[in-house]
Amino acid sequence: MIYILDIFGTFVFAISGAFRAVKYELDILGVLVLAIATGVGGGLIRDVIIGSTPPAAFQDETYLLICILGGLIVFISAPKIAKQWDLVMVADAVGLGAFAAIGAARGAIHGLGPMGIMMMGAITATGGGVIRDMLVSEIPAVIRTDFYATAALAGGGCFFIMKSLEFGEPVQLFSAIVITTGLRVVAMIFKLNLPKVRSLPESPSVIARNRKTRRKK
Image (cartoon, rainbow, N blue to C red; front, side, top):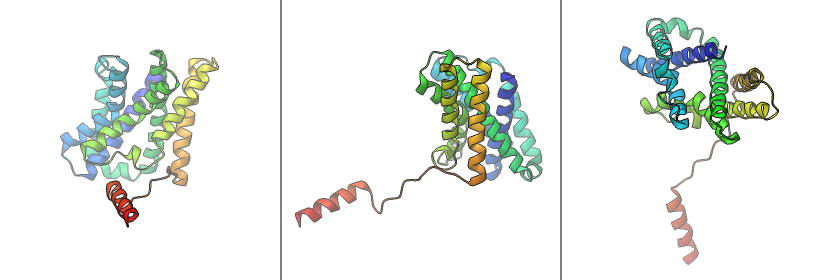
């Protein structure tokens, strides 16, 4: 079941990454690169951090093949898929939940504490998107817009709570998936975002210098 969810999440994320390539009118190689980066990037970062090498994506090449399949589907049928984008986003939310749960589980297996488990869930779920955005010179969406990483962190926290209460692994994983996916779907429906910092009229150094100047006067 976990493996199927992992493959499903990889496929959906690969499609999401490939569409970013469509936005910039990249060639087929660019489409595949962004599909692969988005699909397995988070898992690669997670495995390197916890010392699980070679990363799972290289031990089981099904992950890479699924990403390539997702990229090719978008390259061939982008206009048709775009018409069903709402469904793709719901699937993306489920993939986010699956990745958050799997990342949290991998963190727990390696003996990490609550913060480590939550971070592994968030990194697994959002790392690929960060790599994707950096490849096309965008500020990563997870720190700019959307209730995305926060949902993954909440899912990881839920996983740790269920584990601490000594529920079985299926309950731990299922609860993390439900919390992450549920929060993400609610955020999409109601267009929720975290509060944003207000821009400053000038750089901090200029503001400080002006304040000192006014004091001298």
